[in-house]
Length: 293
Image (cartoon, rainbow, N blue to C red; front, top):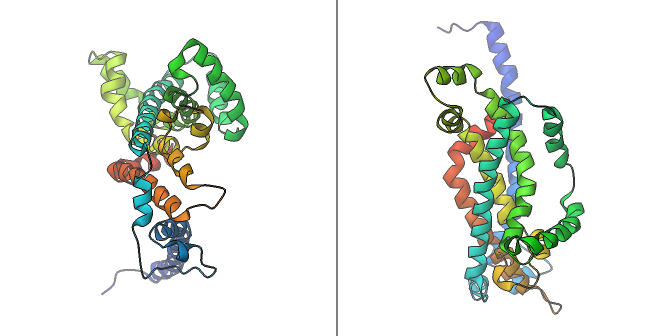
């Protein structure tokens, strides 16, 4: 015999269509987002005739690996890949370290101009990347006069520029995670004899780790997929070019090799997917904490 009241039954029936509609809408959005990725992979295994056909089909009956073979034959591909790994990992490590310390300072310490600084971090996200590219070019040229390894044609310039764009958003998001840690916990740790340094790294850092993981994914994707900055700051030093630059080989005035371009783009996506799979458990809780914060 059911113990549910008629009112509860009616509310359940009314809530169920809304939930079903939300699930269908979510599925449709996921399909729209995933379709370009599907078309990229499909084009990567198609023959040139199928890609350039006036009536393209969303499938292929004769897949080929020739497009991937041409990508792997690009001269210096291994060096491009290593450069991308170095830049992406450096940006991730430095952005997490600096943003965590900055978030702790903005949340746990009181000083003049703290609110203004926090608002400036948010305003910095509103400036388009394209509007800052030319000023950053001249800035990196001036930096190269003082520190050549951080100037133009060096990977250090890419690391600095990506840090400049990653840090404001990372600091703003991590503020919520740090603020969510009760101050009573810090007081209890102080009474137990823990210094501020020990509390920060042994207690506070593990508690905000999910937020750090979420920020690491965003920083990695931004640095790994970058083309604009790599094209702007690495001018003539081909040995310091990153992986997205390797795809330029397949663009030519005579005609673009779209099969190889799609194959290269597919290979460029694989490390991002691998990194995402490795941190996906912490990523979900990190994004949830960001929303709560």
